[in-house]
Length: 86
Image 1: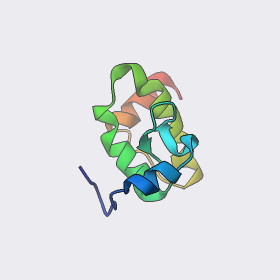
Image 2: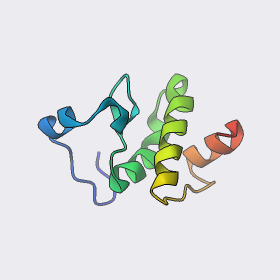
Image 3: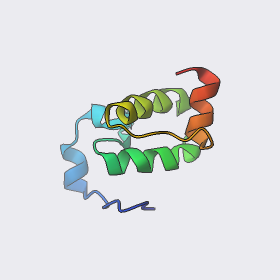
Image 4: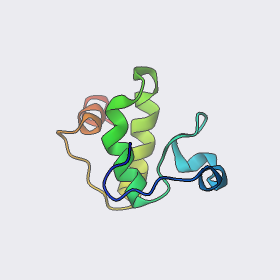
């Protein structure tokens, strides 16, 4: 499922990314290496397993802040960040 103007990553492109380029580095899920993918990860946050949400929220928020991307308080991620004071 693609969002915004997201270009699907090829297998080769995905393999070239560092673990830290993912919202869940150990699982290499939710790429957050550029603004388009950060926005996509924000939208896809609601599909994340509950046990991974804290880590994913922290990593997305860090990248969003560094890239001047605002997270809506009305989004699933915004509510999670607010509830957990990340």
